[in-house]
Image (cartoon, rainbow, N blue to C red; front, side):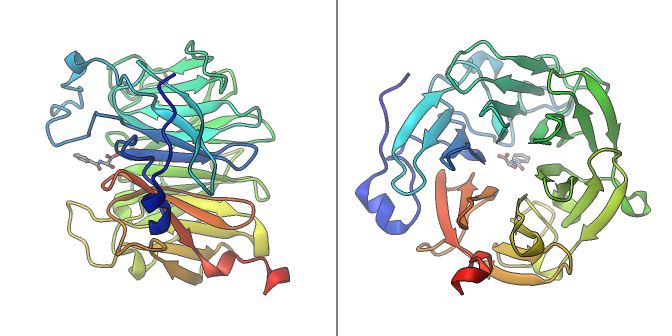
Length: 328
Ligand SMILES: O=C(N[C@@H](O)C(=O)O)c1ccccc1
């Protein structure tokens, strides 16, 4: 493993931390069973306008895989690195989530693959889905898959596929294809299903349908459409979502800039899942604004972390509405 990287002192003063330059584009965030932050970043690789050809084929394979550790487990307060893994495996990391055994489920948009990795750093993946560097849209191929969500009861996983497909697929914990579906309301297709969250208390899957600027939620078991949350405050894009079961269920979302024009400040939102009311809007704790907020996680005690793919950093944010009623 590479030498541990520590957050700079000044980084901590900013409220966020960038692990003293040890981070590349932060594409994914997850939490482990101890509420440590799990960061999935791109080291010295970047997703630029020339990274893919018109057929979504990755153009920089000759660069080889990222040599830095792309998966870092860090303490949520000081940003000290507890574990580092994921070296020489990935080309363009995207999404990451953890399952009940602290395994990592990750997606790589250059490989068009989904991996299940054990968190003890063994480099041999437990499950590999998709064919390396081969985009496609059947049961064995993805096209720039963006995220994974895990149903902690059944262990089944959901894959949002992706920048160049418009569907959600469901697999068993061992990676057996179970089902797939497209978008809900009036069959307007997803436009970059970009981030997923499973709602354990409602057994629903919610999707950040990025360029449609909406969140759509489905019954996890059947894929049946349940609801849509779309707000003018999103300004046309929703990049990432997370969820906390407190107060009847609260959705956290971040919007973002997009090539298709944008008309709202880049912010985080706290939304009452049942009423769809925006309870709070927030920016980074001690920084002007988010760059490209790309993923968001919320700890049990209400700390919000946002991974920024433009400023290669993790921003800490305080969202008022999550403070459990007991402490108000
Ligand atoms: O959205 C894009 N990237 C981010 O989401 C990301 O880096 O995951 C992107 C799209 C087209 C070209 C270049 C970048």
